[in-house]
Image: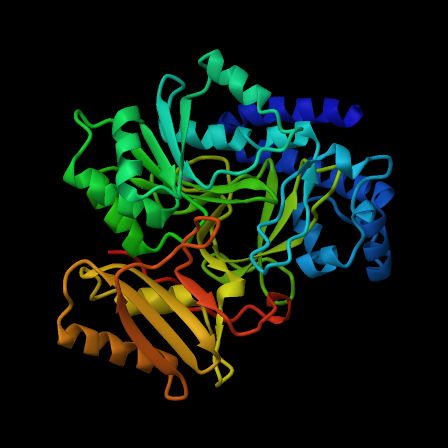
Length: 453
Ligand SMILES: [Zn+2]
């Protein structure tokens, strides 16, 4: 019960945070960290045992700056621990709302939250919409993978707020429809905000460009779930004629960061989740440096998630955004570590870097592509072309791929008519079938992402 009262107080504070000072946000965040760490040590057997083993006491943790004293945890650790040891004593896991981990590795584990904890996490989503000028009188259309809604997740707050016209009217359209059907839904609904996975938005926006909404209604396009490459951003922006803004979220924490309304860095949701970008030593890396993302859910007390290695690589941003918003930043998210390509030479290449470099100068004929590493010494690039590519272009791409991967890797280029999405509807621009548990992979020194022109 007292957890619910605390959560209500937090929700009230979060509502006011867009107008808070940086010092106020930091104070709130650090206070929440202290509360959470003390609570987890006292009430959650998993964390108590882990921290005792490491010889670190929660009294040492005064805020975000001390978090590197605590060990990071991974999916592998969670899978090896009975669920009951990860929830606070006295809590029945079955009474909580499951937010299943994506299980990209094929072995999912469960993250659970109380109803209140679950609903608090929608506040940052509303805040992000406001920052993009989406008002409650506007309409929002979300193209997404339809999910089974859990019985305890009654969405009552959301429905009430929409009914009271305090939230934009939402429409959900399945990502499994074809781009023409999606574009027809968009035309009929006339949303101010369109959101979806970047690859599907690129395809739907191509249809919308041929037969536009008149008069135009869309003011901003929001993307998430897949890596937003500079090329995809350019395509969606030019077809819709509106800015594209990136969102970084996860099943474990809901929204973690949202792109600055002026474009560029992503503001981290400092009052709901601590997003650390760390090096191999577990400490935060400097702005501009690449590291692994480690998250702490600041309002999850029933099943705490503290210093969880979420499996993404990001570029650290500045401690506060230049736009004056009181939030810290990350410069970009480079995607799932699981999808990195280990090469025979010992090099580990992030396919995002590979694909950007491959198509940077010669992309106007490429509609979509996918890189697949079948074996450690074999990478295939499938390309759906917009127009018949010339032999010279194909030869150039082949030579470029072979050069990037090195002499000991076979690079195959295939022009295909379509590339299927995953069952979740997510389009994976890169897939590695080489066995590699990301737990064992250390963060390589990746080159900074190629800036879009
Ligand atoms: Zn900003």
